Amino acid sequence: MKMTKGEFCQFNIHTRFRLLTEYGKNILNKKVSKRMISVYMLFDFYVEVYENLASRQLERVEPLAHASFIEVHMEL
Image 1: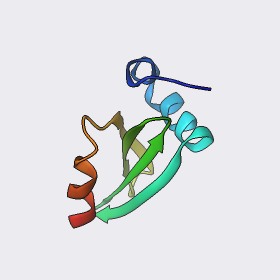
Image 2: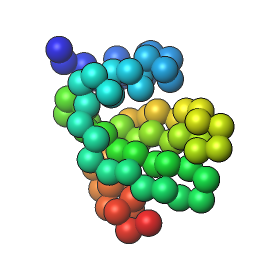
Image 3: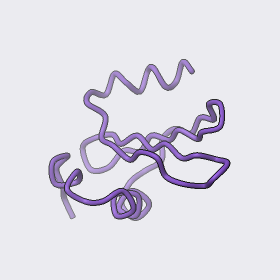
Image 4: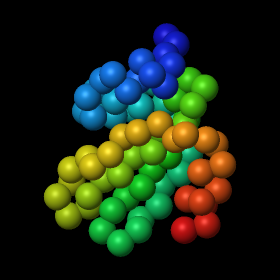
């Protein structure tokens, strides 16, 4: 399977997360305040996931605009 960022963005948040867990590789998990921020590598792009730990709800599942954003997460 292969997918572009644009194709990925056409799916709803829950389908995006399912695609990540099925085809992606988790490369970073970081707890910040009451959120878990995760970064996945999916095909040839990175995806950022924000999950509210209190409610266990996904808040965001979005591709990163540029790989350099990963450095920002590693510094948090």
